[in-house]
Image (cartoon, rainbow, N blue to C red; front, side, top):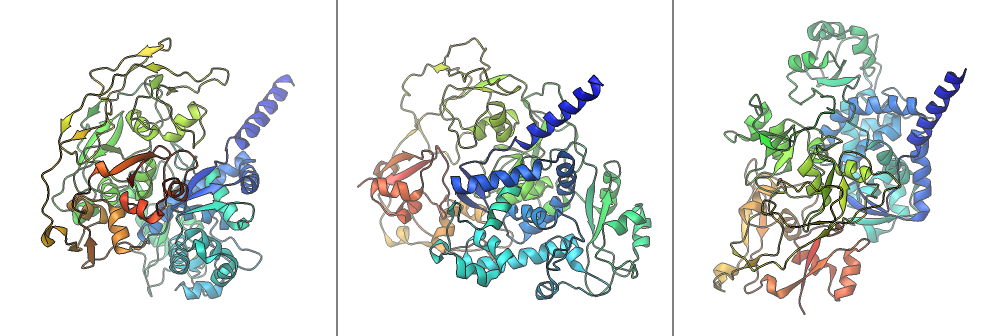
Amino acid sequence: MFRLFLFLLLHLSTIFCFSQSIEVPDEMYFLDMKIYIKHGAKNDIAASVASLRKNKAYYQSKLDRVDAYFPIIEKILEEQNVPDDFKFLAIQESALVSDAVSSSNAVGFWQFKREAAAEHNMRVDQVVDERKNITSSTRAAADYLKKSNAIFDNWIYSLMSYNVGRGGTQRTVSTKYYGAREMEINGSTHWYVLKTIAHKLAFAEEEGKNPAPPLFLFEYMNGQGKTLSEIAIELSVQEENLKLYNKWLSNSFNVVPSDRTYAVTVPASYMEKDAIAAKLGDTRPISVQAEMSLPVKRDLKPLPEPKKPSERAEEMYPGDVPVFALHNGLEAIQAKKGDDINKLAIQAGISKAKFLKYNDLRVFDEIEVNEYYYIEPKRSKANIPFHVVRPGENIRHIAQLYGLSIAAIQRKNRMSKTEPLQVGRELWLRNKRPSDVPVKIVKIQTSPPKPVNVPVRETPPSPQRPAPIVPKDSTEIKPMNTVPVVVPMIVSPKPQQSTSAANTKDSVHIVQQGQTLYAIARLYSTKPDSIKAWNSLDSSGIKVNQELRIKRPTPGETKANFINHTVAPGETFYRISDIYKVPVKSIQEWNNKSDFSLSVGEVLLIKRP
């Protein structure tokens, strides 16, 4: 009896702790925008998160569907240039149940009514209902959201329109936020938006972490004219399972129609996944390894067996052989000059969303030449217990250095997502710092940096460098010769450039096949955000033969004409603009920024009066 009581007590305790584990941050990135969550919205979001996570078994069943369906959804959203965060809307709409039906008779993964489905070229009749097809319905949802964003140029308003319609949104929201890249979320924000934020907070930290998920889903695109029975025999899967995940096809009509290409969803268990992937030619890395408890090595080594780029990579980048290596026991790819996030993800054979997630990157972050980027999930523990923060380091550099996620470091150190990183702080990397153990700040002895006459570097130093191992009882550490410390560089002035029209005239670049914005930026030693701003580019990207204006630097304008401003917590472009009495647009131009995104600790150039 006592054992039963103890079991129930532990079970209830686990559920309680589970439901209380998510904190609503003051600010976060959502739908490619920086949002500031105020108190009036926090309570509603927190209540929704707690509700989503209160029943562990029900939450886990949703999470299993998330891990199965998200790779398909992520791929389509990426192809359509729709923010990855919209995948959480699919959980909100249908819990990723294919035949879900609402009280207003909206059906399927993305809850389309019959009329709306027809507007987005989905077939709905006695034979086929594409609203229940994950591929077809996701493409339709992306199409709706893109058309909405063409009106609002604000993905949060586009999200709202998915619930109340474009007309309803236009009548409700303020036009002054059309084109905004940061917004305040408060008590008056539409409930539908708050609910989607809650779904991201409830699932984002857990998705993709199961080392042995029970279900994998693949797309089979060659089913025209075939019965599900024939496809089941061809792929060696059970016909009943195939029917279960293809309810878009009427049971009475067991043949895939030939009027268009339909994606047949093929389910596989953990044990079946590799064999089915081989038959389908699916090159994504789906062999999930359970997390090892043994210490992992931090040095770079060649892969035991040479990793080959995917067929898609060889087709898109012929002759460009990627460099793969093991770093911290994890597979990584080295960035070369001209590479960007899309190219590295394709060469690695993973989705852009996973590449960003594995490396704690945002869509607008730039790739650093020669840095190694992880192409499989990071670990939750490092091989050393502590790391002392040195000058010039940020939390992402430390996360990359040890093969940990930023979220893991923050959890182990009881840090909020917006908490600044203090130089000298001892970070826990293997275990979670006990609540009764205070934060330890180690005094770092530094000497004024000597002027260094060096050429301008194309990229910052790679964060993949060895870090000092600091004993717990240490109270002071000295700079080590083997550990480079980031110091200001004094650059020799370049010869005075000619001010002739030939040197000051802007260039025009014609986009070639296969070129990306990042590759073009590299060609002209500028930044992608600058090209976006000069050409008023939107999220639809660039096209072959498109003319792009490339601005030449103003003659005589050097860093000596600017001062540095370090972004403090809570600061926005408007606040910084007010401090220095300069226009927001000027700050964006000086710093090659096309949006309003800022990070705590980021250094901005402000032109001297």
